[in-house]
Length: 212
Image (cartoon, rainbow, N blue to C red; front, side, top):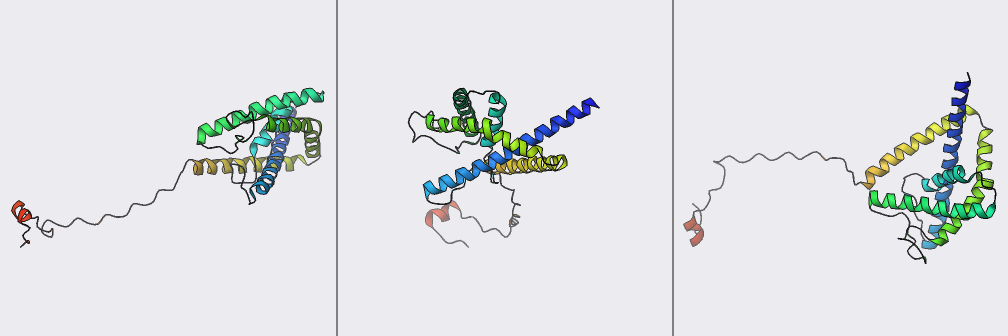
């Protein structure tokens, strides 16, 4: 029927977006890991999750695609991408900081930064990325995914959602400082009154006499 066909189309479109978000999140993780490893001269671990993913990249890409996908003018797309990406990055950073009391990025070393969560330099990069995303990246990724078998796409999207759910659950437990409860050690039996050492009297304590 038409309703079932529309539902299938909606599910497939959502699956394409899930996989696209996953691809961009993994790409963002690779980019940040390589860049920070070179700058810090050591292998840097990026992202809040255990897996190789920075979901803020994928989420921003999907939001920008929905909000700005119809914009054709490159300058307007850059400006709107600049503003929208800045708002998304600040919102994500402030939310994570409030929830977990820590930051996963800090722009305090850049001029004109705001609370270290956003800065014009990074926003310019995201503005350029918004142009690339709308004009090249998303059409290519979504077009490639549309050529795959529908069953394979649905299965892959389901596995990705399950993996992200488990990873997020484990990450929140670790960040909240959860530890498994250790079994309490059995208390030693209290000695009987007869076995207790006699308490010294006030006089013996005052004179420091030995106990009988």
